[in-house]
Image (tube, rainbow, N blue to C red; front, top):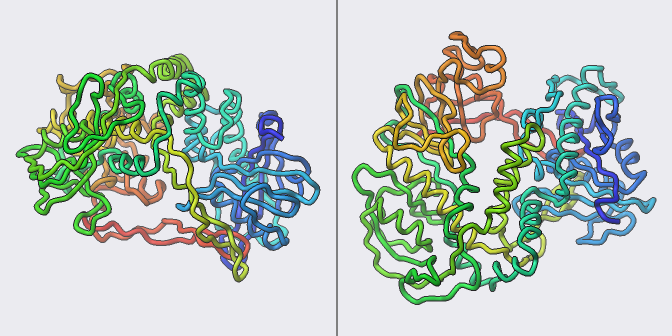
Length: 580
């Protein structure tokens, strides 16, 4: 039975926090097509009742973070004697799609009655917390709060407030999924939806000719040049309280470079030594062995991963002992502008044909939707614009995890090695290279004011828009001013706090209550801070001020999952801010 003909639901579990009594104490279930108000959400109190209900008919059922809720389902299935199979489950069997990194995509159960339920992860379709989904889709309901640690013994009946909380959680995702599915986006992930639509635009035959499936060994070499976004905390201000400044973000960074940059296509041609850019083959990747030293007053941009000699997250200022890396011509030109490089050898590489505007029709469509829509469609447009490029570099190694049941606890073991055809990794290589180039060159142009960058953002210690920065809130690829700050403390990459100028804060609570209030206390005794600490819950971040950014400082409030009999509990643990 196809996914389009099965009923589509959203569900959510509320669970106890006691490792000795781990179970579902409440659940919500909403039909994506028909649920409109909290009264349309079915509320129950046990996983047994939930699974009996969902097994009444064949359906697709989404959980927002299936990785958590799915363990409770697996615990139930194992205890009832269900058996895991690789695919095509029969009655009393189930199958899963879980990556070797632990990312859940689906769990399909064939019930004794003959019906099937495919549980999917809506977080792969809407990659943001439920609270942010409600805001992005401009829903009339929002995520509520309850006391998660309140004792709820067996037989506990949820209060009206708790029932409303559960209903809101389910209804938020159901309403957003209705918009997404209504646009024909029925794949497992939003990235797969984006690629599927692009294939329809280009046409299957043209797509396959433009982006041929390359041999595994060739793809592996090309993949060595694939790198992520540039996140860098400048050493001149690191750990120091700064003066006032401004934060800028690129309008749709990845779509902007996809729109008009020269991008690769077709079968690459191998070249020994240093490939030469030609009119027919203007792009190339090359393996180089080199040493390097940063030029005076330049930002570093060479990051070396997978080596015991270098820290994975650091950008190198000097490379004394020779290293060998695969690099695109875009990155190579950038590196040579920022470093004095001694290239000891060119070890061969691949030449590519180039084309511009190949994504124009796709981007024009979704930019128009974004510009002329509000709420759900606008949120959807942003997702579709930012999700296509990553699919090109999808890892062909799809070896997964297999659920097992040992000593009454759900666990996971490595499955058999499994691969699939790559899409066209070189496209991901060049798109990300161009995107890094945009941010790094902008940081370099404004070096005298530069303090911090993260992929598509610049944090500059300047209290006016620099004339050399293309500032426009709507233009594709231009820079939009996000907010101004009075002071900032940049601790390291992914760890900083900025005291936002009153009236410039974009937090919803501040916009609603403190837009022009000098005594804004959304978080921090000294005013409203924009704080980011990777790995620390947002609720804790919002309480921090400059004084908290001390190496070795420990914060509570971090929740760590632990699988126990019954499912999963989230245990309180400490987060220590390591030295900058």
